[in-house]
Image (cartoon, rainbow, N blue to C red):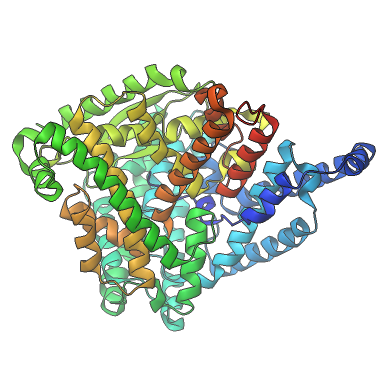
Length: 600
């Protein structure tokens, strides 16, 4: 999933030992009596946690109003502007974070175990501690990203911007007029970064220049930024919106693009490792924790990736031998990604395949889940360069969108379209995210809206495996595609750590990815550049899946014949955006409270 929410950049690590300790160090009878007799004290802690989380969420969306709109928290306070993206505004936000974190650390969470506020406390503490830890990276001074950056957020914001009333349309015009200012500030921050020794990598800058060109060409009415004008059914508003895009936004984007190409690119860094920036080694450790929610050593990540790639390739060889008469995976992948019989005939076939896979998944949901999303998901095409992606529902009651690329589809292999659909839609991102958002008052907003990468991407990758278990893949070609995708995510552990901690070159990373998946060179090159621009983010997929699968296996052993897959999935999904340590502690506590026939 391609995400760019700033909430995804404000995640933190809550130590597993601390959380699990809260669950496993069960109180004595005397302690239990004390807790019972001090319900007023517990109520005070609950109230304090909720008040702090309320304050944080309110102030967060005031500071980053475009993300409030994306998350369907719409109001005149949010919908008329972009946030203040200046360095001084960020410093003010960080001072607020420090204040909240001091208060959170002053709360003993033991009395919250078993209550909804235990999740609220854990997620809040994670948000704050991650926000503090990642400051060493100073990414505001060098962030130029072709994925997971502002050029991803703007189309999502355009789809979410309310236009149902004259007042809402006036707010939309005010915000669109502010977008130009936003990019001028981005230029100023990059200039400040250059003075302090913070440089983005050259290839990332080149890619952003190319993507910006796409927003500057063609009729205004055909750009993704014009989406509010298409939805409004108000010709005068649409005319005014088109004028703002043409006269305000495009000139500012053009200035941004020209600055990148003419001034920034010639001096951008050739070294691809984040170690090349000041404090780079500590920065990478912070990004690992940001991307996974776990405190992992880079070498540990690297070795885990090597082991996972080997395990998955054994599975691939079994299918390759059974259905394709070979165990030579590189040779087989070369066939499956180049021979015409294994490619799509065009965009219509690729779109149809995605829609059919999603429809099969919708029908299978009741077999594996008690909790089921009420929000529908639609599969829609887009025809420009880029990967498929998921866009959450911009309003409750409106469908979410799985955007499937039809761009140059006749060159695309059929191998992985089904696993991509299961990852982005059901049982992946759409199912997990919609359940979280629909939980309403049962979950604090902080657990509904703030993305946790290891949990969210880990679930989507687990969803691919689950789709195979539910028999949703149409043939062995698609099943092999699922395993190729799994191998690709495992290879990310090797490559991301190889780049940022072991001195790998860009070409070395590309060659490793090509050797262990069926991806094309063009795709792999873009992916490797993504890891350069977003260190650690890609680690969350495989590490999260490993954690969820390990918890499921633990539950199966502990519960034996009483294990129920629906029950396990509901426990994983019912509390919104958990961290992996919180999820581990939650499942451990659930197992402790469940009868255990194996033990009896």
